[in-house]
Image (cartoon, rainbow, N blue to C red; front, side, top):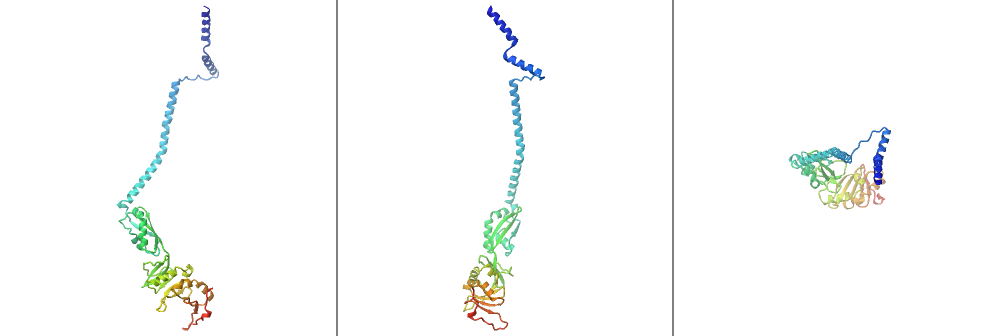
Length: 313
């Protein structure tokens, strides 16, 4: 009986005071009511889990849409570039892409039509094919026209091409049978006939296209630019007794007599010789030693003795 009374008192106390957790919740509720707050809505764990899951699903759904909107313009641009390139290439390799017009740039001494003919580019060739065969066309042009050093083909528009050429510099002209022929910087003579020379390059006259001309060009290529520019004409004046004789007419009015084997060696002294002559004009003989004979108003020329001849320093 004693234990029964004690158990009843404990049950009344616990029912009155509640468990510790219940007392803490009641105290918290009492404090919120005193501060004027509304009681918090009770959300079960399952409801909270469902709400978080719905929020995450919505966030994942929104992000791909934004990324898709951002990437769409980039894909569209690349698609247009690819489509344009494919269309252009298809046109260029089709019969409609064959060469329509041919332009030439850089040609001065060589006629443009000669370059076009030498390139073998015709209306039967596609423009893109002409550009692809650039090296082959360069070989065609340079072999047919020695005065062309390089030829390059580029596309101009959709079906036009341009041939860009680089010419060898002309350093002299050979006059033969009424026509002029370019002497190029590499020592070769172009086979293109000209009616008149271009520029103020020296004229080589009375030479046949034989070994004597080759010997002269070999000597001429050894001269400095200043000496080459001081020459007006080189004339072959050889005889049976002296088959290598040449006469060189200078731009300053003097004449130089020389022979082919020693021409380049002795003509290099010309600037020093004329500096010693002053204003005197005449014939400078470089065949054997150096002798100067001034021009005389009469037919008798006063020759300078050998012992007083002008010698190079």
